[in-house]
Image (cartoon, rainbow, N blue to C red; front, side, top):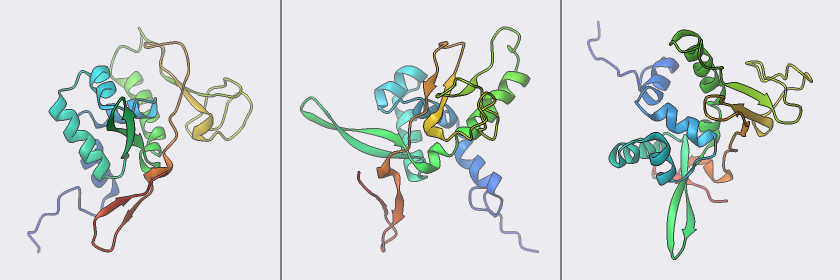
Length: 181
């Protein structure tokens, strides 16, 4: 019998690997906010009320994991960086929707608040978990999906599209290279 233990982040179970990344405190909330269009450090900090050092660490880990990519932008005379969703990060939208639904049903407060809804931007119909619109029957891509969080605002918010710069590839040296554009 082999007594060597493999951490969940390196083991064969995809749930263990995903959980080791997504289960860190703040990661899911940062992803939610990135999907709703937040990009800048100050925006995340202000919306979440998270300490700078904790936020910096989570963002760094999320970039290393390929969920977000850092993209430069001009701020007056300074070049700064913002965080944009990658394809891998954007692919977590159904997971966050499922967590929102589960949280609404099982963590209390459901009597007081309406649930989060995913809607089809074109017709306003609700989306089923498989992203089929209940009103028009269309299979909806994320570019046509919006979320309504009634406890925050009744207005639908379109999901942020993953950036074209988010394609990660490994260089010959093993360093992570992020494409631009």
